[in-house]
Image (tube, rainbow, N blue to C red; front, side, top):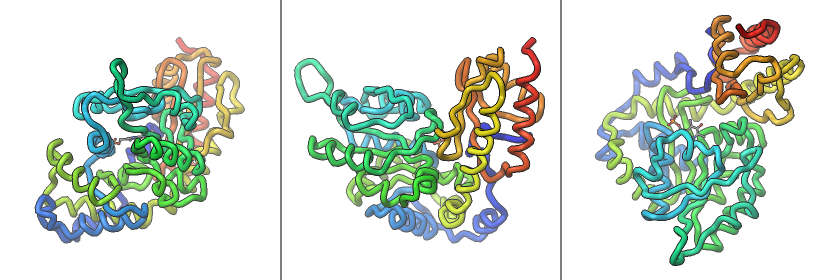
Length: 345
Ligand SMILES: *Cc1c(COP(=O)(O)O)cnc(C)c1O
């Protein structure tokens, strides 16, 4: 199977498995796992933040971030297809007692102007805004990347109103690789960032939440409340260290593969995709012009050894990663072309 469902399917490299086997460990709830401590230091250093917290999943990292920045009964401004809104089981309501104030942006990239119009003051009728959340790269918009100046403007203006900004940077390293900015450039203006080690960077599990000492200290207590107090987590952190050291350099190849595939697919009759919008490792294409529904198209691809997820009735998402090389991308393209040539039954 050529698996283009997500970059979460990446398997740990042999070097990672070796590092996991050899990892020095301790009880991380006592703060005594040297490998976790080293990973947290390294993540803070790379992002230019004071402190970092290792969390088992990106969802937990975002959930902690929202809780640490807000109080019950507030609103969280986010894009309408944000991961925190659509894919985290309403955790912002469940854990933080907040509701989302979604704003639609075609490419997933919010502007300060759009956000400003939705900021709500404390008053007798409306729930006040507690947090602004931005997703970089934006998953469901097709891996789009925030211009750095937009992040800077949003954070600068939000801070003037006393509002914190959290970046869901599950694929922050992809955003950095595609834009030429460093992860620290993107992290500098905002108050906290979550990024995943477990996606394109290749670790088997784990994400990082970074911010100030004070906030991350609070985040550590919230992680425990969520059942995320880990013991000898150095086994995972050892893989995370390698993900940080070796993963980022591989992302450019994933991006080139996604762009290549998007360019090939764009030439097929009935498929709608704008390859110029494919900036990172995600491409979303509309198959309605082929006569197929996206779920049936996805089933037909699976029957030909290629898996990609249908996002809805029209759109299919493909995500490139280091376990799928250019040759496999070419094979995936052949499967897509074949499905386009047959009629759905
Ligand atoms: C994958 C993802 C997450 C959550 O990560 P998990 O480790 O799967 O919980 C959060 N935000 C975005 C944008 C993602 O793509």
